[in-house]
Length: 281
Image 1 (cartoon, rainbow, N blue to C red):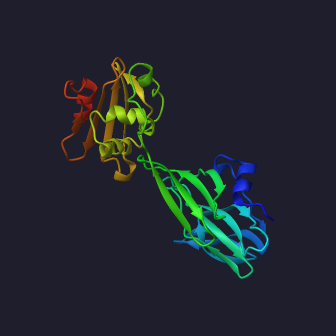
Image 2 (spheres, rainbow, N blue to C red):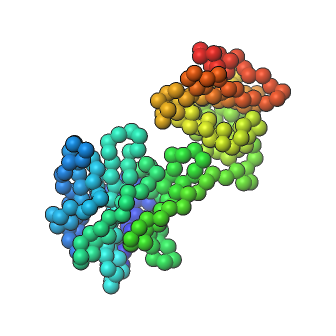
Image 3 (cartoon, rainbow, N blue to C red):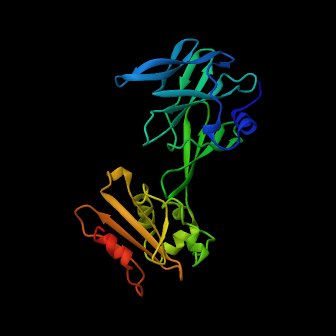
C-alpha cells in the first residue's frame, strides 16, 4: 500500500498521460470508482462515482480515471488522478485529483494547461505529488502542478534564452522546413535571432499569430511560416521568414482593418514575399 502516483506513472508509462490506462472501475481502499452518465449544459456527460455516489465537481463530456495512488499505511485517503475532456478542439483536456477517504470523496478544482501530456511525475520532500505539463502559451515552457491532498498549486516556468546563441544561416534555417510555424519559437537560438528585429513580447505574439497554419516552406531563398491566431477568429494573422543565405529574419503582423506592420533589420528591406503578404496576396 505504499505505492504512490509518481511510482505508478513511472512504472507504467513515464512520458505522457494520454498513454496512461483507463482504470474505471478502479478500486481504492475505501470504495470502487466508476464512471456514470449525467447531463451538462443540456447535453449528455459523464461523472465519477464512488460506490454509486457522484463525486461533486468531476463532470464533463468525457471523464476517466487515469491513476490510483494508495497513500502510505495510516494516511487518511487514496489519491486518484482523473482526466476530463469536453470533446472540443480549444482545450482538449483538463485534470482533477480526487481524495478518497472513509468519509467519501472530494475533488479539486479542474487544473491543467489543456495539454494531454504529463511529464516528470515525482514525490516532493513533503510527500506531495508533482508533475509537469507542457504549456500551450508560447512564452511558457511548462507548468508544474503539486497536489497536497487538498488542493493543487502551480508554478509556471517561463522560457529562457540564458546561455543560448543566436541561430545562424544554412542548416540552422532549413531545419524548420516541414515543421509547424510555431516550432522555431520554442528554440532559444531562434528567439535570439528574432530579437534583432522584435521585442520579446512581439516574438511571443508572432508565435500566437501563426498558431494555426500550414507547415513551414522554402520560398524565394527564405524559409517562411505563416498562420493566424485561432483565438481571434482569423482576424489576427502573421508571417515570419528567415533568409537561408545569411539567416536574416523578417516578420509581418496583419490585422483586419489596420495597416500591416513589418519587422526587419535597419539595413535590410522587406522581401517581396513579405510585401505581397502585407498587401493581402
